[in-house]
Length: 546
Image 1 (spheres, rainbow, N blue to C red):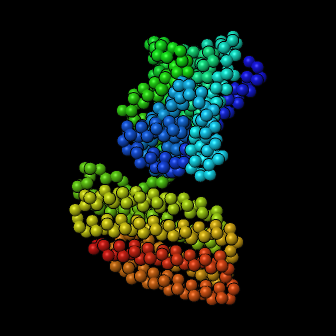
Image 2: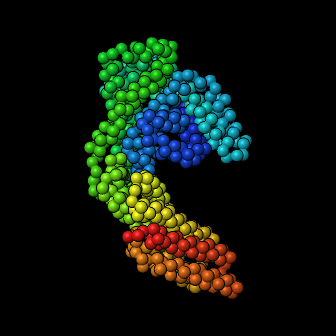
Image 3: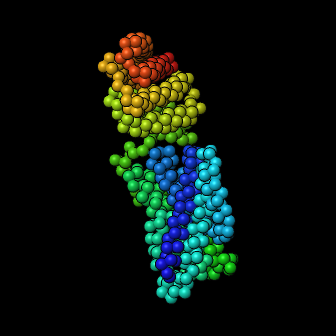
């Protein structure tokens, strides 16, 4: 094999991988967060979950990308471990589409796809067409790279040393190991299966010598998810274990089938004149059959993963989660004492949520005073957590209120539904205030000493109001409402007074135009925080007759 063939092989591999990357990036840019929404919402049913995982992966052409996404969702608490199982099974089926496309020999149209895709990126101005162009162009580049690899590896079939090496891979252990290691290095089973198909098209390998390498490639592709799980919580790590178990079990089953049954000759007989098709069909059969075998055992896979990585006390607080609320089962809905239990849980969860909102309010004002945009990352993380809690608490209340027959408890639960929304809105206004920090830094705005004192007063007054609510423990306290009303009136008075002082500074030329705008917007958010604090107090005192 000449140096020219080696360079052609490397160039073909580069184009193949780049084409896959173009398609994946184009799809992600075109779809935005919709792909994530699909994965989050359509996974409660195992069959639907498998279908969604398969379709998303078929479009992305990367099971690794789908699995990494799922690991992230599990880590953040947006998806359960049980839901992740179905997506992973579907992803393993979806990843076989690349091999099937190669087997269909649509590479003849590859230059046309590449031209159309590049033309859309270069000559069309709308960004959405650039994204679609990346998808189409990536498909063309992928197949051009595939043809280059096939052509460069054709001379290998006349090299006795290489033929002997490939013959050794007919040994199950060596073949599986080689496939796993090679795929772990490239981190793409689609790419390594494509290379195997290129070797088959060149007449270098046959299915009987490549089948165990193919099985090993399914194990090697798990390395990407394993790397993505580094530094994540316990459940995210369990997700990668399930992914690995799926492929190891499938490899064991199919290795035995190939050794004791005429499976390989049968698959060769289906497409005798298409070696690449034989590999693609075996790859698809492997993942479909393994999914069908393990689909009824999804819950067992979760249990095994939890045994391998048991819960630890220090892991309990990782990721977004409900610390106090526990699901209400059908048998518990009418049990004695359930109302008291979930109202107590709601109080604790809402108190926890309010503490997070208070922290964000404090951080937001501090970021403006310190001109420190780096605090925005912390602020953003807590705000995302507040949104999550608002959604989860609201869903919990929607469930329990249907079964609540006690009028007093029903009124309290309804009040908590409104409370959680007001807490989330306080977090939103804190985010607004923190966002002004970036503008302060960008526009090089410097507030006068008087303005800084007023910002500090706003911060402390907001914290005092939220501390009053926190002291209530989310319970009915008759003395709470008048105290919060006084605080809200104080905030309104301060807002009016600070606006007048701001106008005076403007007339004196002390305050810059940019500084005036930002300070005015900050006052608006300050006033809104007071309004939402009053709303919470009204709900707690007006809807609870304890």
